[in-house]
Length: 272
Image (cartoon, rainbow, N blue to C red):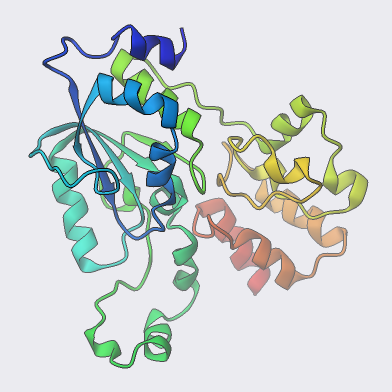
């Protein structure tokens, strides 16, 4: 039974008067993953019928006090206030799901983790002394316990619906942990790295985008982060043998998921 069928049949809520309370929270991010929720369009009414939306700034000004049954958290922790606020959200949430590359790996803003953020603020702001920022952009799991991580930049809305429906139905979410290469094979794509010599991070990247870039003969940019047990070291070696410079390899791993451990280690190894 798919998520839509489950939602329509009211499989999640015990009664219509006791729906699960859902809250959506934002930290340092572009809001793209929150917009993916609104992008559900036809499914939004089903979602609204299955849960009580208690906090979602992108959709409504109405706020219902916690505790919350499910919290969706977008964004990374970048300020002392963030670091304090996420603990409060965790205490008020029975089940906490982090969504997107920022929340699961620190996001594109984690590029500052490889530099001195104080130098950046002095170059951008007229009065950097007013800026309160942590030295690093870090994922939510570095600060509190996380029940589930949904990757992507942005997330795949169908994967989000699967995670929500699984939680409400009391089962384990069925989210693939294999690589983008599997999606390429299923679509019948010719391998861009083997056939065309295009640098591609698909072998180490978790599926979820439907092999969007390779389908248009572009290399994968690793938007969905490292797959389960990625061999990033082997891929980096392959890229180097195919003519990529060390600097280009560093750039390849320093994208939307630059601070994910396996990607971070490879970029640092080739930066030396």
